[in-house]
Length: 215
Image (cartoon, rainbow, N blue to C red; front, side, top):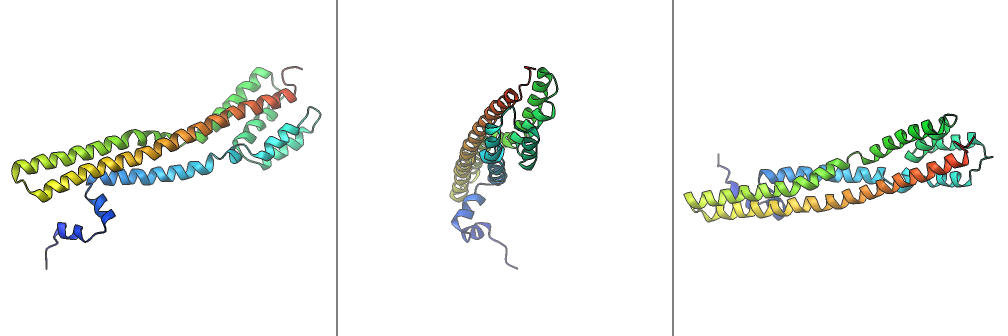
């Protein structure tokens, strides 16, 4: 049996695979983080949609709703259009006979719950944004340690080159993972803020039209 020559095997790999393999252990950690981050970004992009969180049909029905309008019709529409906005407005309708202070407390609790659901997963993007450059730095230091150790022992140019490659590759990937995660985190956070403001505004509008607190 012929022994496997690792450098020769590596040389037969495509360039982009060599780029990751030479990065060492920390490179694989960064690749795993990038895959999970992409999954979170795609999932949050589907959940934090303005027309999904704030359905136009519900907003239109609320705008056309008057004090003399049928509450039952609005109630049925909200049930048929499940969304954060619908669930908050349903909380208003379900507790409309309560005192205003208690209605506000119930609605605020419901709204916080909906906002928390929208923000679910964003903490992972925030953490990944912070640790990816650090993991890249660890990969860099690992490569430099290998370089200095090799120079002190043998001075093999090939091992020195591998250490430099590991250092540079990890640094590039670490920043490459952090930057898009930072952009996605800020973008989704801003979307959630807009939804939160709209929820408050539309809820206040419905309470005013129901004359809650003025009876």
